[in-house]
Image (cartoon, rainbow, N blue to C red):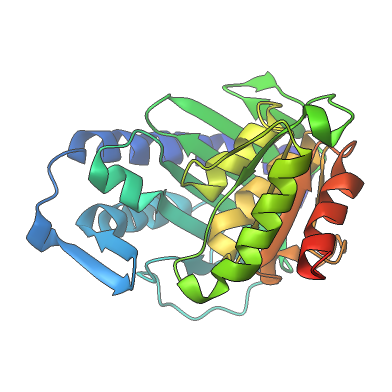
Amino acid sequence: MPIHQLENICLSVVSASREAGQFIREELGKVKADQIQEKEKHSLVSYVDIETEKMLAKSLDPLVPNAQYLTEENTQTQISTSQYCWIIDPLDGTTNFLKGIPVFSVSIALAYDSEPIVGVVYDVMRDECFSAWKYGGAYLNGQRMHVSKVESLEESIIATGFPYKRGYMPNLAAILTNVLHHARGIRRLGSAAIDLAYTAAGRFDGYYETRLNPWDIAAGILLIQEARGKVTNFQGDEKGILNAHHIVASNGFIHTELMDCIESAELGN
């Protein structure tokens, strides 16, 4: 697909994300307890997630006809043989939204052959839209953005998140302790998409997390790449990250140090 066509698609996705964000803002504080479901332990969903996903699909359908869908709420069930796939998290940070914590986002990516080529993350409450298309650069509200220039882990602010399943906690606690020992600080916002977007914008210097789904990270991966950062799995591979379920993202300068922290914690050193 030509770069100019990707740019046009990206601009349309930005508009769709803002429209969805407006709906989400309007519903903030309106969801009643009996309208909340627990998909699995600690993982919540409401009609806002579901209706937002349907709204997005309606906007995205005409942009790439017959594209597949991979979505968190699985409202789009049509079967397609297209190599193009929309990967959507309609409300990343549902628990924050339901508790009135103003950190949640709309995350939309278009992938071709399992590689993101368009990515948009809309920070709903800050009205900030992070966008990128393959070979076109990364943008924050239409202005070019780049990763930070911090060169050492000890000067870095690192973001992370925790999985819903608590059985992974001993290993994650070891990694967290190790990173805390070496970095300037750690932040946990509750939205992987925002964590990645903020890293792409230079607000965070790095980010790591495990037990993720493609819709958590697809848009953010491209944002980092186009903002001149680096994204790998925990083994340092840059290919096939969407299906790796774990991710390390950084400005590139601190990537090796951050990887070393993770690896040494996993080995018990």
